[in-house]
Length: 296
Image 1 (cartoon, helix red, strand yellow):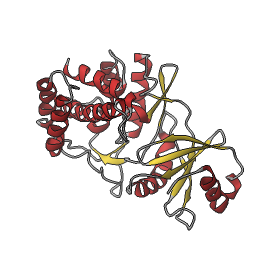
Image 2 (cartoon, rainbow, N blue to C red):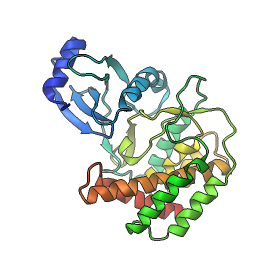
Image 3 (cartoon, rainbow, N blue to C red):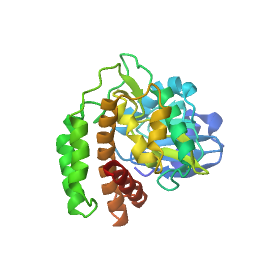
Image 4 (cartoon, rainbow, N blue to C red):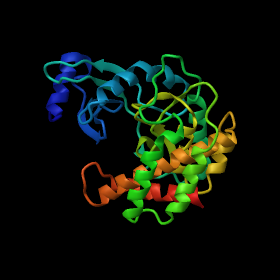
């Protein structure tokens, strides 16, 4: 069904009447959800595309408020959970609004500040999770489990002319897949740190959004973000600031997860350039930069 301003306003009157007279406007359209600005400091997130979005919203409502107070960067904190009704048959959230520009449109340009901010955020987030914490949908387990997806992604990207040296890319992933696995406790992970989910202001990171893939597992999955999000010359500074210092095997696995992320973003960027559904042209340049850094 179409999500309109009238629909969102009606849902608010129905379940959150104290917020219903605030100014309302469309803020963003993502993979899973539409985000509507609600006044200056709140937002309404409604699932509009994928069937899995309902469970992801409920997961965020259950866990993010527990984690947010300990994080050094602002994140959208769920405040209200809207339940399915005759007006709208799916759950929805009212969250805090995090200002900033997505890093795919406004990349970080201050290496020192960006590296320290990202390391501080992940150091704070990567704490042992309880036994009942969610598991990752398609990430966070052994990297070797992604062999078929990696092979398909690399072959397709190479055929499209998006990868200049597929052998170098393959070597990074194979080294990562051969690294010893994570033997520590399951740690809380954001799980989806691509450029559109990290916000910037004045060249530095100012917020992290979309915790729908929040899960517990191997920190290498999140540490891949150093190659995806940081400007040139910042990765070593990130590793020096992150605590505890990542061991060599974890860094090898992180490079493999970064390759997978970059290949995915290359395809999304290519689709955007050619105007295909689901494509986002702004995702291509950071993906190319990531592969360049990983294979240098």
